[in-house]
Image (cartoon, rainbow, N blue to C red; front, side):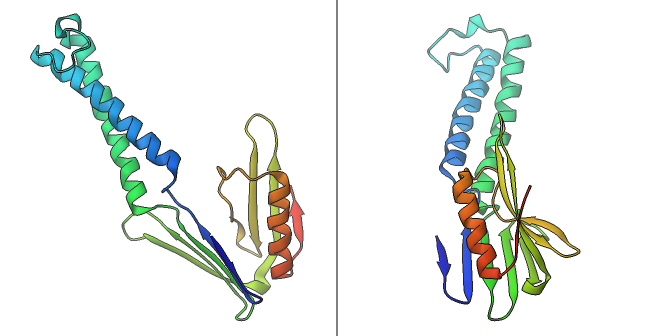
Length: 184
């Protein structure tokens, strides 16, 4: 969802709350729970999973390794669920021609730098840069080139925009900010 007027352009950025992250966190939780349950059932010698008798898997080494994979998977799943609940990476890009300011805001992980906020003057913007790399690992990223600060990515690397959509977005933003476009 974006909002635009003659003088202000606000572009909202989705963070970790994507369908794919929910799916991966759920699949990882189920799989690692299964691994841990198999490891525990092999240790106790009780049949917690009815697919196979616990005597088929010895605790050392198979049950121990299954338990390790289960615990590691639960930690990774917990990390994903925390990132989803904190909505890491979400925020907005606000371009304000009236005040001559560009604000870039993102949510990070909890702690000292939870709120990531950058503010630049529009007159310090050198250009809008498009980076296109085609091939097996296609990469299309839109950057805001700031004098003396370097390039700030405006699109995520996993955002699958077609070259036409990327060009359209860059052209609209460059026209709005009245800066040139560079293509790499």
